[in-house]
Length: 324
Ligand code: GDP
Image (cartoon, rainbow, N blue to C red; front, side):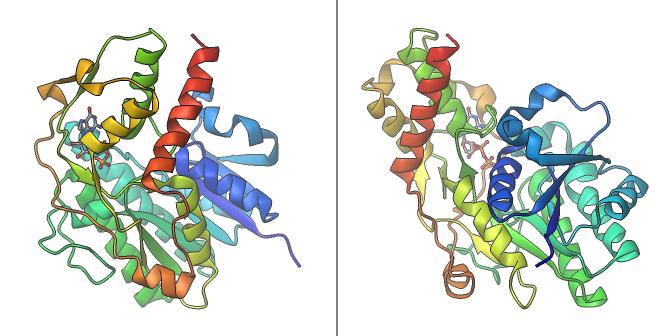
């Protein structure tokens, strides 16, 4: 059988790194899209597999560069995981967020349409498209209602994927992923911030942890589980969007409590509320209804909330005690 080729944007991010590992195990040839002069320090997540990945120069802001990248690499599958992916940051930089997160995806769709519309396309959509949803849990039929520049940008890309699928008969799908975390998550996200800072406190490297809204509740899963759903979506006979999550929610406070419990510390002695971490708007209750993913993709999450935290704390302890 011919070796399959995948082209991945955002390859050095959390999801890109787990997806690359999965595809390498499946004997794919992998190309990562890399911006010219990109910072090599950002490659920590894929350093262990760098010798197995090839890179091609392109930029989500420049359509012709994407067309060239597709012509050079001839992919069977494209995974668009790159984005300005922080909700908090999207309030500070809404225009840049729109350029990358929304228009970047459309530039890729256009590039596929103009080169080879048989390429299968995965778009990283997000539960944030349901931010203001009055109905919970959310499934693929739930009416979108984004509540941040990030959510609105993701929704534009999401609808365009649907339009290209229906109008140009492309195999283009969106995975509507709820929050997914791991030891490779960026430090600006609350789960990684909590595990990282709590371990620093445990090791005597820090004294307090400043957080925003402790009552916020999220459906948190493990990123390593979710990349398998991405791949499965592109192996289906028919292109279809899927909601991917755990179907269970926990508050930031629960995350804090579990983390400090693992470290045998009392969180009340260390956690301070800092208003600068509060959001202009919070989402309504976002809970994934994964009935369709279970039924059609035969997918379900393997790692639960407690084990996710245990894994993140263990990795953090391992890393920080070596780099103290
Ligand atoms: P998001 O769901 O994509 O915005 O992921 P985040 O990890 O950034 O935020 C998850 C939730 O944690 C949000 O509801 C935040 O309001 C809440 N939160 C509370 N304190 C903090 C904090 O210090 N940093 C971040 N990033 N989020 C916080």
